Amino acid sequence: MYTSFDETTFDKIITLLKSHQPEFVSGEKLSKTLSLSRAAVWKNIKKLQSFGYKIESKPKTGYRLHTSTSLLLPWEISDGLQTDIIGRKIYYFDKIDSTQNFALELAQKPHENGSVVIAERQTQGRGRLNRKWVSPKGGIWMSILLRPNFESSYTSLFPMITSLALAVSIEKTLKIKTELKWPNDLTIKGEKIAGILIDASIESNKIDYIIIGVGINFKIKPETVTKSIKANQRNYGITTLIKKDQNGNPVELVQQFLLELEQSYNSVVSDSIEKIRKEWSKRSSTIGKNITATTSTGILKGKAIGIDKTGALLLSNRGRVQRLLAGDITYKN
Image (tube, rainbow, N blue to C red):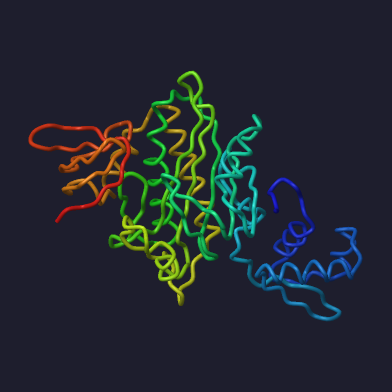
């Protein structure tokens, strides 16, 4: 595990190399600045190269950073992050059972707020209703811990504000348009690109903490994921944001997403959610469709005519309008 608040030798070396781009930094300067032996500097450089940093080594000249890594390392995300709260503490794992589970452990520490847990791979990732969430390398798997001073009814807003923040971030950083499938999915041409999971603790009608789990198929092999979930009849297709022969910067996407999420979160704090509701509706693939909704209490059918200010889906059937707070939906032709 690496964090954004425990300064590491890796972080110090990269900061120094970045500050001198495109010039070389001598091994002697790195050694003196970091109070390391030349051998230790070389060992750390090799490790950074294994992370994916392109670092040129030249005898009697030193080291030069050509390009940064695409790994979601905490010091990379922190470098240039514009948020005030979200992401100021980042926990990074190459592999973990579930970022959501680790965030639940962090939630037992009252000082943790806005903390982000991010991993390259999950071995036991989970989606809604404890369904399996396949999380291979190449995806973005993270959880955000927040402590909002909200009433419990506000919990239903978080899938809406999170999915909108992610859609806007993808548009800004990758120039890719996505659609929002109620309640918690992002799709491209009807296939899932990302999903959102909300865990919350409620005490005396107040939210003690809320954990937002986000899974993004950034640059994965869709067929690999599809094989793993083929038994799930609710699977309606998997796709990837970045294809094999394309390039994209996951660090920029995460930075933009954390900023957009914080701005949306602040809108909820100030009770200014109407703009969020309108922007979500503009990107919705659900509104206007005839749907079948499977809920814990049964099956509902009707036409999706909008979402209300709590994030509930409004269904119209024979002149009667019903509010749907949770459920799995399928579209009818």
